[in-house]
Image 1 (cartoon, rainbow, N blue to C red):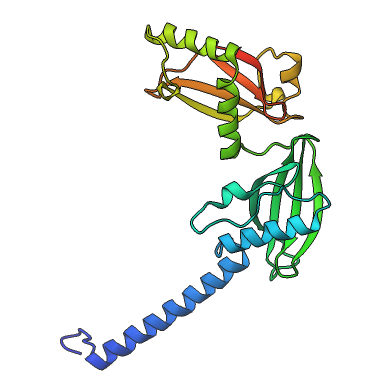
Image 2 (cartoon, rainbow, N blue to C red):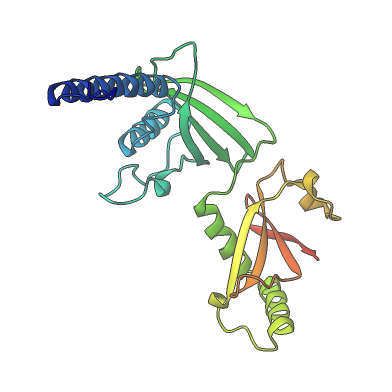
Length: 243
């Protein structure tokens, strides 16, 4: 100590550094362990997603489609999610405090023939399908494959194309020559959430899987005054809402 000021020696400074480092390491390990226990870390990897789908394929009554679950290296898992009559909408970790050390996965699938969502619970530790629960009138967000399908349905409908061309011309005073001149945003449509007057087919949306589409000019700010409603299960445009 010099003039009331404590000056650490090199050895003291080194010991202080090591103590600080040790405390930091202990704290990090505690946080990591807690986070893992709470499911905040260690997300599903691609191998686990593939394994989950394989378990589900093997243990559900209905066989999967003929296309294989395996994919070439680098291909997205999003494209492999189909059972025979079901489309996989979501695969996520399932947290259950009663079995904290078990790695459980929730798989949500939609059956277009029966118009229902099913939640499958898979235990990766045991490789078993733990439970299967039907979720009536439950609609998860659209997946990319459905968004692409919705766009195909719209532009395969001659009446819908004519309406879009007229609206484009009204807004731009020019002819629509390419769909690249438009931007589409699609999302799940539930009838009871809509203030609009709906026809009979659209009133079933929610019980059936439907999408609403907003159309924009390529500037991404000018919105069309027509908004198609698509029944994805029936693969058809069922109504146009006007603004």
